[in-house]
View 1 (cartoon, helix red, strand yellow):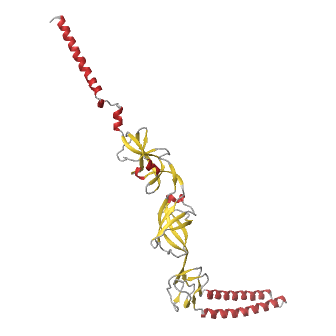
View 2: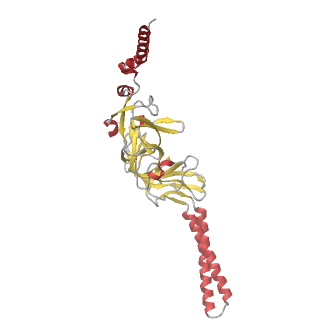
Length: 361
């Protein structure tokens, strides 16, 4: 083979090698789908999500509780002394005034004792007066005079004791109120252990209820509540007038009492009440409840930062039907992702679309 022929073969071989090395780059440059840094490809891989900007807002939530309606004042009417009922001066369901005689217990024996005590008292007073005169004239000693005065004091105390027992045979109303059912009859023998009737002041009613410990700092005396009872269709209002001084260690609840007027007698003591406690208005961050993801150790949300979805652990406070308070984990101005949260993974590329309706709630 001649030198010219060899040179031609070498040139052809070099051309084939050059084409083989250059061809993959030409093919790659002609196919946009194979370029890893293509901007059009990054946009196609982003997930569309709806977002809202977290803002502080006035929060005046309500806490639902259950309780019991109580009389303003209530007492079981009993006799302080044992004896036979001589007279019943009330009617069941009637209104009575403070001091009205409700029941009279037979006091014949006590009246006899009182008569004897008053007779002894009169004699003792005469003896004491005579001894005082004699003592002033130095006819008796001071010891004799003191003995007569001591006897007078003892007899006077006995008479006062019997008078007190006689007064206890008249059972009087301790306050204005409504009489309940009667459990005895005239002629019955009663003792302090027997309930004669009940007396209730229902002109005002107490509502006794408890709230969870975490709301204890958000209520105070004077705050309003609303409540309903099963016996009436309307809603009633009351104001908290007393709070327990401690948290119940067993239930972790705080006991409260509210007071409401009851001029028409619509509320009955013992009724079951469904209560809404109006909490103090305050500034707080809230988000839609559906944006919250529950976890074993708490809750988390997704926030939009620099084109990606970031997982953020949060702590919650007051919870309403559609909104929940965030006490830790979010700041005013954060962009919260509220859609596709179950499909998202931390670091996923997302394309936000502002949801004005969710942010305005």
